[in-house]
Image (tube, rainbow, N blue to C red; front, side):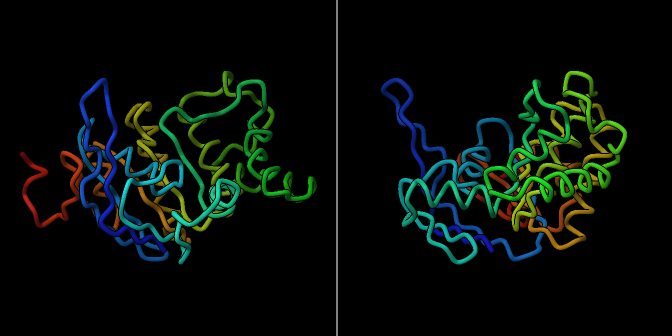
Length: 228
């Protein structure tokens, strides 16, 4: 489903180059649940941005469901993000002027899903994450855990082939975090391809496979550099 080969990404901060990703290669199979674990500044968020078609690498290749991302136009990249990728962010990224159900429906508008179907899919997704009685509440009326459930429902309703979760428990207490991880695990059990970005080894352990990022380089679990 996701194939990254020899990916490099460098940013310039002031006059200094920062090598965010160095020769990164990774393959994620259809339906696999993979955690990418590493400390702050290790390059894992840059990697997620590349995988989510939010940023392009300086070199290397990235195939998403067989499509060469580098060869896509901006419009095609936007369509890929809308149709194939569901995002779950640490900051929830909900619009406070909209209700929970309106936030869940929003990506479906960009997918040009008819209104009646949008509403049905949004309701179904919110019911699945246990928010049937909170659909008309705005984010400011919901707890952090409930807001993250709305974000998960949004990814569910979009029926994306791939779900990218960036520190989804980072702003939650341990109980809410456990509930959110159980929902993400359930999505994996239903066949979604999930890539989870985290600095928390306990969260990473819930995935089927964990890889580690350290100073822009990717290592598998058999290599000890991530422990240094």
